[in-house]
Image (cartoon, rainbow, N blue to C red):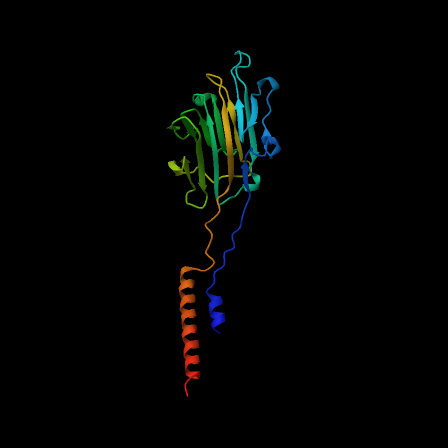
Length: 249
């Protein structure tokens, strides 16, 4: 009987895991060898690229303008398998040495967007970035010291209305109401580099995106642990008394 009671207070976790995409370069594979699509450009307009010590390096340069003006290189990953995520995130680690050129979307950019009109677009320079959610929203600028930095956007489709939070180097920089649920069937992540103002070098260490996993549920709840402890103590007391009585004359 006690055994059945103990079992009744156990609460088992059953997490459900969904797809998370992580793009890294320790494997010496180009993005297109890891499921991404390289956005087509005439060969003479593609920037130089390399994989160096685990970094994906783009070195776009300015060209005589007109007719060509600049080299660039960008990659796309479709998000159909992640459509309908309850909570979704995209994070990246990178650095660049070119000045910010928002209108030219240079020297570096990463965007979660699609045909639905919802987008989270980041144009990143050596010491400043601009966060663009569309023409109906003001641009958000953020300055920082040159070097390696981390960005992360979290989207919460289970709030009413949907909401987002943008982190930069682990600190909340911007948050608010989202235009709608994201990602949708037509959504995609795009990242890359482009020359503007001067030649530049952009280095990507990692890009990751996917559904945010819920916190794991403990195998035994706090209440269950208390009840289990009480049952164990009671059982030990009963056993002790029975053994003690059996020793009496």
